[in-house]
Length: 287
Image 1 (tube, rainbow, N blue to C red):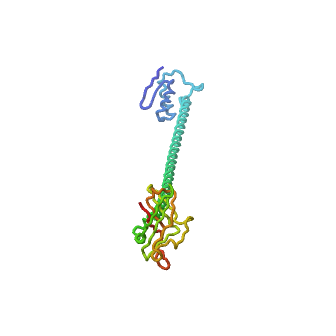
Image 2: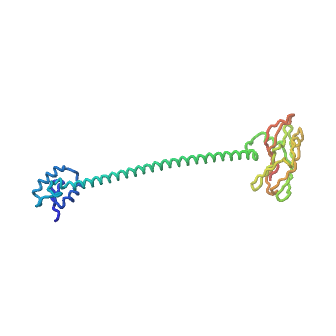
Image 3: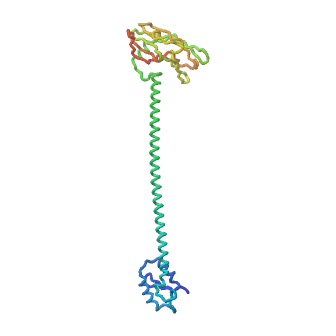
């Protein structure tokens, strides 16, 4: 038998008894409760005279009211509703857990990113500090190199100017000894009667080559004994003196472009031989 349904007013359905369960399920799913069970029982009794039912409804072997008959179905629906509500609560709880886990993950990622930034900053600062120290060391070495070889810090120094005016270099002898050995000697003359010059134990020959290399050789050492008196020149002592013959190994004569001697002292020709300036240098040979 097809379902016969008449809509009376709002949200009220009349159907056959065979369709009552499906109709109630539909109503429970879409409607909110508007009538109590007592009101529903009263409405049922009022509509009973219009029902095509010819037999009394028995429940558990005896005649019961509509409320007693429909109660098991209502209980099932309420149980299903509770199950749905539980599933809803479980879903909400799961969503909350997922949201908390997501927030926790974001916080952890932010903390990790901050730590990485801090570590990177410290590393950069450390590298920058190390680089600065290295630059300072290089600058110090460069300054020392300039002081030893170029005397850039002494530009315009009156003692350097006087030294070049007072000292003359002559009798330069540069001869090959072998393919990679050269002998060298020269004569220094001092033409001033106020100042004198003297070699020191730290005096060195500095040789610069066309290839850009710099060689350094000790003037005194195992091969030549140092004697201060024999290595000083001035009008008050003697006007000139020959440098002891030096031998430079590991260099070719054709590659030599410049020779100078460093760590020379300038002193006054007084009884105390007062040193005026040290670590000076004199050019001996240049092409």
